Image 1 (cartoon, helix red, strand yellow):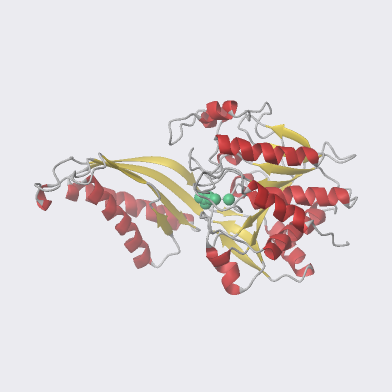
Image 2 (tube, helix red, strand yellow):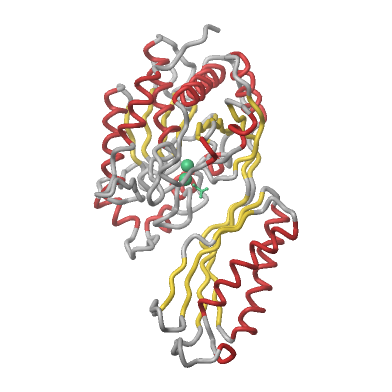
Length: 416
Ligand code: GLV
Ligand code: MN
Ligand code: MN
């Protein structure tokens, strides 16, 4: 099979262009799901998909699909490629966008080279992968696979009090198609690693064979507001102090257990939030992850025990709300091997690896053979404007995606 090559300038130019959409006056890039900035990013993506001559479809949860049906293959299950274009707050330009734009690039390259795949090829951009505004994360792909009803998803209330369904209507992306209307024959997601492994070890390509479990909770602690100057330390019911103890507990517990688990308190709000008032309330989120389901459950149980202890020792009340819970996922080893073979054929060093981040692929894996391709992230930095991947690495990853698609879509690959 001859090796085709994607248009490097077109891909990197689009990544940069999309990365300029949704910047504030300080230059910070934020395209939260369902926001005006998300709409602007979606509009640009749809314009590129249409200009490429693909059919565009939006489903009821706002997932965007660009479909290349080809000549004689419209009725068979498509190869689906994609990711997301919503971002975290003050984001980098590669997370998710790289996978979507590389998928479009692969389809355009195949068309331009006159390749006739045996199946339709689809680029997908799933709604609200990040979960920053609406929990859970990977919401659009979760709905696509039937893991959450479209009604429940549309009625999700965001951190700013908005309702996802109303926001999708407002920005014009509440589509007609029933979620899940496209069942993929296989799904491949290309993404930046967002961690340090590939760069540190000198690999160009990660063949991602699994993805760790994710547990999200929101914890509310109620104490008693009182005067910061007059209340002796032993007489306080300090919600802020209780929250701080929970953060330290998680760090120390994981360090002691020597496990690869990670724990993050990424949001924290105090009430009344005043310098000289003991906090009456602390509301914060806990993100726990581990590649092993038993260990993740053990970590959740250890946290639950510690919450009881903190409540008793600090004289506060605690309540816990679960925001997301996804078990670790194993990807399709046939596609993983195809990624390795494609990298090798291009002279690129690859290694198998586990994804620490959540991805739409972990949802699509419920309904189709799925795997992911990673490329290096400079200094392992992501969810940060310093997120960077060298152009050569972006192009290498997209070419591997192209080869994987050709191997799957143009050969007799029946799935594994
Ligand atoms: C998605 O970016 C996640 O892993 O939280
Ligand atoms: Mn992502
Ligand atoms: Mn992300």
